Image (cartoon, rainbow, N blue to C red; front, side, top):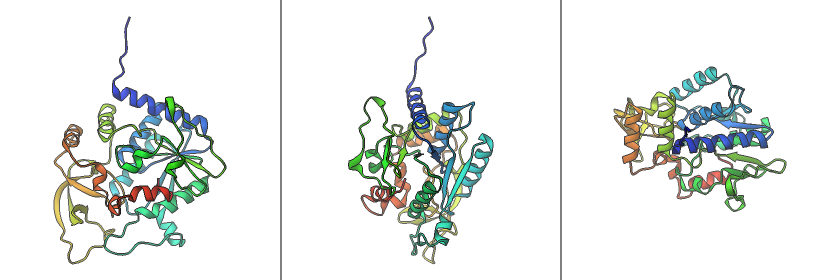
Length: 301
């Protein structure tokens, strides 16, 4: 009699697919938040395994700061065309133009925090009752506190004291009118798990995840891609460096790391030896000790 042995990636995949199907079964209008980063790309692959040959039971939603890496937007558009799913774009620039948020000023100005208002407006406009995202517990301590089904109140706010127990993989999606649930199917994965899964599934990624030569400046001890979105002055010296990005976000707050890794195996070896988390390259997390938790309490994903 033949036997089939699950390895740990099979177990993580099965858990994530189960969660995605729970979302489809429990909610009326879910959405999958897509940033063009490796974690949301992994979610798309998992959704394909969960629901193909049918269509996804939710659209993809991208909250566009207008300050994204060009490679990420190009990848997003090609991927959406390939999979044939619906894409909804929430524009931070429109929120600024409508006076709902105020553009930050100063040398370290970023649009990253402004995404919260655009996200909440997009949720309200389309009446989404659940938003699926690629956050993982190993990324940051505030994310480590959050449940897989994370309930937000009618204002989109997260209260860590109001979380529900999730015993025996039972997920409670019951909410009152106006409330919203953020769902994290790969919450139990690590950065290394994601990369091993990408290697196994042969998933294509934006080129910025791999080593390339780019013009950069040093800002707050980090290598930032030189771009029109950075408020640079005469003190900023532009030079070229061989870098890659471990995480993808707004160009104004996402730093690069020096790297020669051009293959996935090289990246996996590099991560295995790293003593710095991938969020260590996000300047927005360094605003305060509780920067991420404060943003979550205000409605950030």
